[in-house]
Length: 442
Image (cartoon, rainbow, N blue to C red; front, side, top):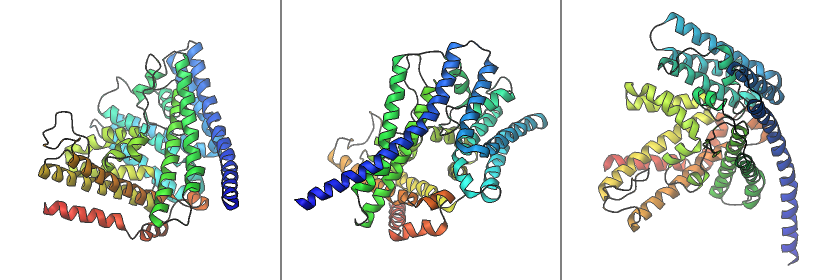
């Protein structure tokens, strides 16, 4: 009894020493986002001004927010923005062919790789990588939309930089189109529902942060079996992603972006319940980062689709990998996700056709032609089996993102990646290969 009481007391002490500083740091970061975006919202709300002035205010407040968080490294964001705008203008003036989107995409990604590999200190790059990725996505989307003649005229420099450096999403994302940004910059509202949405997402963000930093590492200790430890580390990483996603919603909503006329939130960045209790890896890919998925689908996949399905899929995963950074760990994980989900999608299609059972990677529509519907025992059993395989995949892939702070500062090495999967006997790569062989034999 005394040992149990001592264990409980020590556990409570550990949690308190972890939760308090975690909450403090989380709320301190949230304070900066809220101040910047509420300032933008109130200025738009109460002062009538021309549209270019609104863009200028977005640019100024976004710049102040970035400088407060990354200091002099903001010069790299300015360099990317200015260089990309000049490139887009040059491409429009010298070529009549609609290749501006492709050239801009290649140029922007080349600049990111140059910065990461040669120009910027690794610690500084880790600080600004996410910011540069969001800016790059915005730049590429504008270039491609110009190719598709979706603009009546070329956006001017104030409009362009106001969009790129908008405080609502310049730090954490999510990506939104220029049309959505421009529309929301004109919206005026103030309601209690708006405040409730901000507070509820802020609370959710803090819960995810505490789960990631304190609860999950405490609940499963280092003496557990290796697969349980892998699941712990992967889930802690997923919770940190949900924290960032919830803070992104707080940032966007506090600036008044992504709201309907009756102040209901239109923003959905991730869906944790579809990830923690997944139907398939295909759905995890979709719901992990919904705006990123939409961007890749609309601006990369659809652009490359005329050249063939395989080329479009390969290019989509390649662009996604390069935008996230040029390191073996991210590329290996993204390539593995693409391979695993492709094999699972086709394997389940074969199983569904052979057994006439509702077990596709995506749920069937209400009026599907399968003999055994989703409520049948066979369908539930097969879908549950694939769900467990997906959870195993998430543990196997997500364990890659656990590392000491010093490793996270400079990025993950080749040896770190291989050692993590080697510790799990490369089990999931073998499982995926086995599924692919069975699929070919069916």
